Image 1: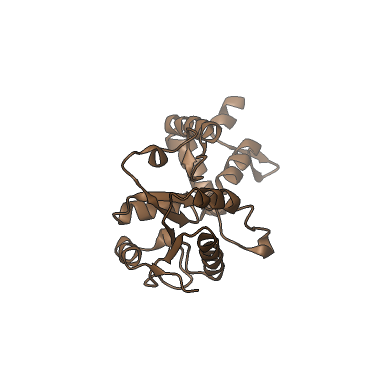
Image 2: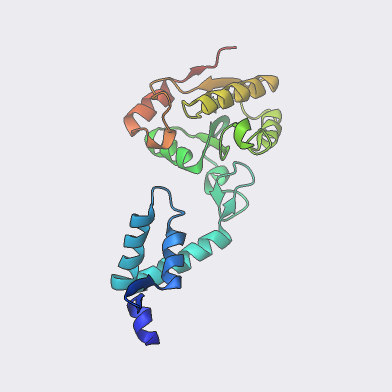
Length: 216
């Protein structure tokens, strides 16, 4: 009977169908992924258990290792297994240009869509006082220290065209000017209210190439 529960995760109790508790946990765990609701999580769980247990086990192993090993770059705050990520270590990058993005996904979008050869700084969010996200949570003290070193000549602000993104851009521009760094903003070919990581490559590349200095 125990073996049957492992393969067929339902048991009948007085005519009712009851899902095995471990299966419920698996479905609930899958729902942490963005865009995955109850039905999608259920389909994923059933697919792994019915058709692909071997690769499901591999997924679990890699996920557990990634959560344990992958941290943040000490310089740019992007995902990294080492103290410095590969981009920050790369000798060929232009260190006088620093592009500030909200998330690692935004950094990847710019890297894939443009010919930008500078460095990045990942905020991991945007200013939102109502959600308790301020300059400390975005690591802006560390960014200020980096700008104060005098190596950066242009701070490229690539926050999303949302209300919070615009407020963050304004704060970043002020921070840059305090340290004698020229702030620039991506051109507004980007859709108002849009998330940067979902913008198509052509639009993002054009906006990046047409960036302008942030007005005072």
